Image 1: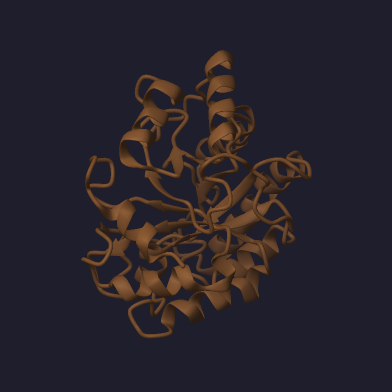
Image 2: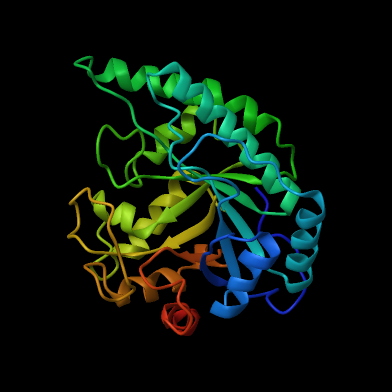
Length: 299
């Protein structure tokens, strides 16, 4: 698997570029990039449509080209987050088909705007008393839906970044261990990457709050996925205790994960070249301080 992309510009060569999810508002350039400048972002994540709807929003080719060129000049690595509605394990046929279409569309948009990858939640199934049968059926859907999409990306297309959930409901991939069967269902596809959300894996039981726990967690991710599959981190502290299965993000160092975990994370050798996106309260407010805090913590 390839390493970090070759980039030039003021943000090129950063071991861990830091940024946040920014609103697009008036557009990718006038909205997202303007926000990135105001906030001091070195990397950003965006939605390219309504995050709570199925509409496949088309881009403006001129704006796409300007965004792509400006980011390339800066060496700014960008990411798209797929809509929240996406659930490839849904037993509802319309939801499943819309989910596959949405993922495919967002990957096309990523290529058009020069984004490195599309983050997608790994989904859930509905038990309905069928036990493992429902899980197995959902995982077959994941395989059938995603493999053709991944195969269409080519060797230099954007990454599909799988984000394990916090374990609420009947999750298909909650926490680190579930990545193993999930990736196996995709035949370990070389364009399937991993997005580590610190709040999610902590909620699912990862011991990030213990000395050495974060290192062990990343070690396990590398063991499961292989070198180079960890492509992005969502850096979020947690309002709730470890293993609570609750996805409630807290400001860095102000939750139950704690600041030492983020120092440990950024020092890990597998984090070399991995961008870090904040999704915590306040990060879209100028002068908030969390982006600068993570910049200071990186080696």
